[in-house]
Image 1 (tube, helix red, strand yellow):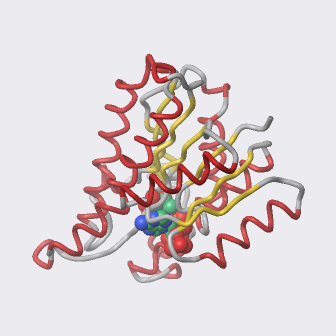
Image 2 (cartoon, rainbow, N blue to C red; image 1 turned 90 degrees about the vertical axis):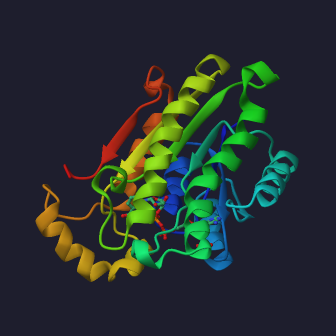
Length: 248
Ligand code: NAP
């Protein structure tokens, strides 16, 4: 039976590319999305048309009950995931003097609470101390955690700083329970997330000057590292954070 991978936020961008690559590597792919069912179903079709297995699971991963339901649906469809990729995320831009309960809550829910809620459900099923068979968790952070983000990006940077710390602490909690935990910090990757910060054309120009490799990355360059971390080739890699950022 093929291993199951659950990727949050996989209707587009980096998550969609992880889904496609995971299918090529032989996983059954459960891909989560928030609103964009058309895009999520298109990724599912691309996988099934080439002989793979995929399902789309709608859930707001920033909401605890929604995450519980998503895992229950996966239990009933295929079973326990072997790999969880906490990828879903949101980039909003506001200066600190413009913070309010809504804009800070929205980004922390999408980027931080999501990792807690999804990891909780995964641990309850994967942990060898709870009768599970172990597994792998990959957290998607950002170089913003150590660079402070682009203009208006303090909240985004803070959420990713939280993910870096969460990753370390989670690795300590789970090392003896058969679950390997690691994070990736992507740099400027070509996806629609940059609409909040002036759009892709603008970020392409920024990348030429601030990225030592002189260009933005593409989602597949992140997906390749996710799949390596998920594989047995990375069996002694635990609690670490890998930058995929062109030297930035
Ligand atoms: P993206 O193209 O904007 O895609 C975001 C994905 O997350 C979509 O599938 C979206 O679903 C989903 N999503 C957002 N909020 C969600 C929620 N509350 N519940 C469930 N799904 C949710 O983003 P991306 O660029 O691929 O980014 C993926 C991850 O990489 C994020 O964590 C981001 O912070 C991180 N990252 C990206 C870059 C970059 O340059 N692109 C750099 C560093 C880190 P819908 O389609 O349904 O809305």
